[in-house]
Image (cartoon, rainbow, N blue to C red; front, side, top):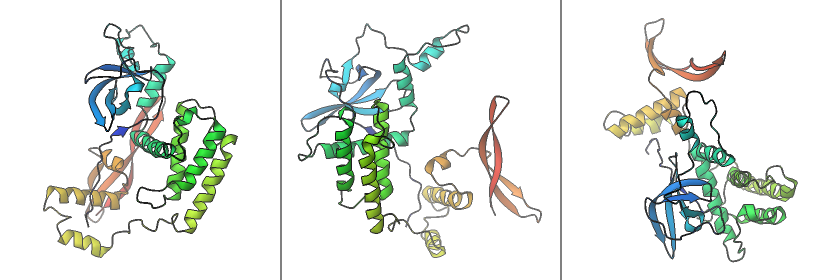
Length: 320
């Protein structure tokens, strides 16, 4: 048994939007500057050949995101036409007397997209790929993107999807996973200004009703109770980890694993992000009234006073 923090490199793959006649040239090369869907811009970093299809990895301007796109979503940016400056670039170029930078609705859309939580964006893309695979099934044969499908047709498709979708190994999804998928589809529709919400729209009442009944069925089969969740560590498990040098100072990995375990158990840190957000000064060495030393974790929280935002410390946990 290994207790080890996980760090995943996020790689985003997408084939969500279908824009007609976007690519003026179906062949692109590495370092080509391209427009995406006629709105965003990026630079081709890699050409990917998959079967009889060609895809392009494109790094978005002013962003760490790199996405895999089909050629029909891309168009070469002419060398003699300057790129539209990003919101950040416009702010830098503005002089001291210019209080506001003029931005377009497209700039706003690009800014909001770039600031989307990476985990949320990755999940949305992943769920859309599952739905796309379902729509591509021969029995369904639906080539339109979801934002192009009328609400009454999309409601029927999503209801059938909820009943039929399973994991790649054939197991059922957890009830919460199905709800999360619908949330991803709803985010995509909002981004495309679809005009009807899966979560609240009258046209999708059948989808919500189907989800509720499917969740009840899965819970009756034990899915909602997470029967396969990881059991908590026992004292014997922890002792075995120490004896096998998975914990302790035997290797760099064992030191990191020990630090992760202690921070999780004693300081209440759960997600990888909470561990990464810790800073110098969050933990300090203290002495109690009896002279015994202990480590004190001071959790930070943000507070605004008289228009000034700053963080303060709030003590929450001790390790003796």
